[in-house]
Amino acid sequence: MTMSAGRLRDDLVFRVDDLTGPATQGLIVEHLAEMHATSPAESVHALDLDRLRDPSITFWSGWIGDDLAVMGALKRLDAANGELKSMRTSAAARGTGAGRAILRHIVAAAVAEGITTLWLETGAEPHFAPARALYASEGFEVCGPFADYVLDPNSVFMTRRLRS
Image (cartoon, rainbow, N blue to C red):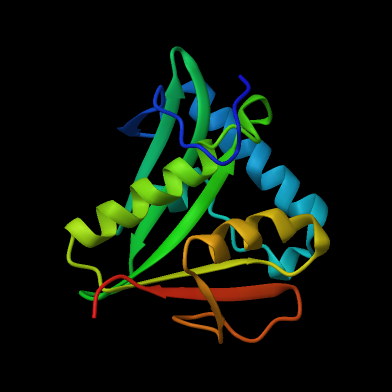
């Protein structure tokens, strides 16, 4: 899988995922392991399989043929607010535009659901710089903690208004 990072993939198929497939579960395990390897335990806000099954969460996987390329979730906080959760690109799909594509897919789904503000938490460590750059390039701005989050030197909080 190679592609210019400036273009969006046109071969990526998104599915609402029931979290039962081995590829999806494997990417979630990989995501959690990396979060725990790069951040102190108290600063890891990634959700495990059980917590991703919460009824307030819609989880998507993105596929290129039979290969899982990317995943991400939208957690509804209330009628107007949603939180981006569990975004992860597989190692094989990094740099291909898959991350930007699922981010745009989730934003479009949030708009379709009537969500007016989208929030996210990501890491403050250098490891997370590419993620922060992606979010900023898609209109997210740094903000303070939201929902149940508290100030944490290892977290960066971001938000984006979806409609005025």
